[in-house]
Length: 389
Image (cartoon, rainbow, N blue to C red; front, side, top):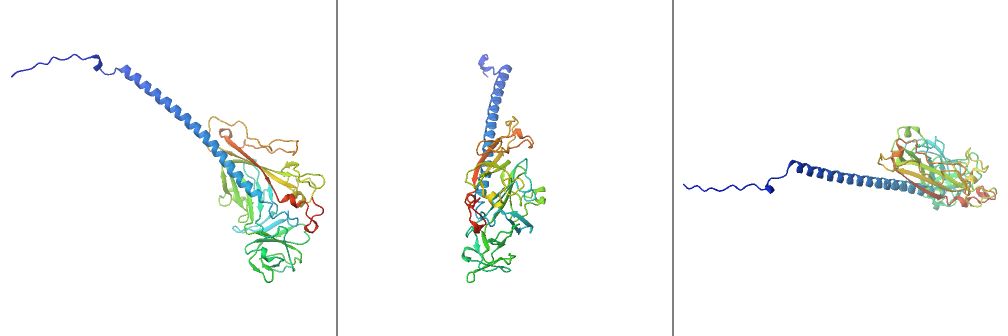
């Protein structure tokens, strides 16, 4: 048997593999690359969350302000007649069957806490009333003295079944309380409206006001970091039982992450008759103890030309860099002596919020004209006016 011998080739340096030091250096370079990439990803995510949080706050503030503005803008419609403006509207709520009484005025800033319980963090509350009046805003005259369940009116065609109505004596009484009724039957041949629990013995010439089918009685407050709305036609929004447990079926959240709501009346304070010029901003509700104008309640309300609003929303993300050092400011935050004046400051206060500096905030403001009010200041005698307000 023949044996063949093959000489062994010596190993070359290129075939010896990586040394321990080389492997460790490679691992260190890889770890450094991973750290850099993680840092870049973290910074990118932080920037994204910061941008998204600010955008979310701006969207929430805009949505909240849009809803408030739309409601307040229509609040004077159908309520500006001297015969009913500032009267008390009495009725029973449809869901909890509570007897309530509300001031029949367009928009009330900070009504009594028995009407709208206080909201969160020094925020204002609102009561906004608007109608979908299908008839004359000056009312429809009775052609016969009212009897139980019947109003006989001049223009029955301006009413529809389901419309909410109130009736007022031709001479406005003091105090002025208006029971709210709904039309159940209309007899066009006799011009009779059938209602329940109406005011009887109102003489011919007294007025029936059509408030429409979709009468809106809305209370607003910031509660637990949300802008909430309560439908006063359905629930007694002033009941503390709803706010103590924060029943979301009654106080319904309409915008999230809202931390402040501020509002002021813009009024004409001319010393003689109103001239339609905006002179000052304040929170003195016409006819209240804070109202020092000396005017009748109807004239004081007729001089409220606008309501200005401010809402503040915050980002949903906690930011450990503590990006906020001071609360946002708006035109109502400081006293101003320039026309129109702002004699009392209504600042935005965030200090009552836990960790308030760890969030970003967005402010949205607007001025809402009460368009029907300015025309009511010169109503003539038969509507309860004199030579105007």
